[in-house]
Image: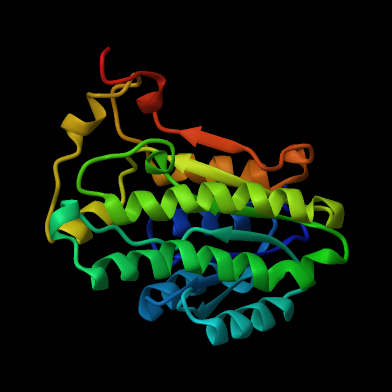
Length: 248
């Protein structure tokens, strides 16, 4: 039980990577605030996980929603873990990207992460904690059609390092996680339909796409005391996608 007694907020936790993390956290003994805008799915997951999981509506781009979420999590105990997982994806060439679409991605992915980190500082300052910011391999290298998404994920990478430097003296560790292609609904939602992922998996060293549970295992490590000397670092789980370059 690697997370026994820890209280965690996980954003975007109603499905996909966030839901997988919520399940693993409860299995490891944590009490979890499942935060999302997908109320029906979030409540269903909280009911499934039992008394150690509570659902809270959270639009991560809203300061007021963050205040409510932190207050709700505080009712479970002292907040020790924040997983900034909520994110949206938008495909379009730079020349065709509207300001509205760009701002929508930035507000959720980048501003949501900023607000979450800022809001939990008081709760974590008395005893320390772990903030885990979910970036992407698109936070390590660019990809066509993802100008807004890549901008937000590079920003998360940078904010993580600044926060780690500032918050270390408070005992708060801050790290970023960089998943590659993971089998979730994010891509189908962004393109408006099913996407065959087999050809994507064939392009990486391990020859397959990743599963949400594999990212959850990494997040559990960063939430646990096993990662007590890790801060300001980038943890990549991409099947080997960033092990090469375009000339390979």
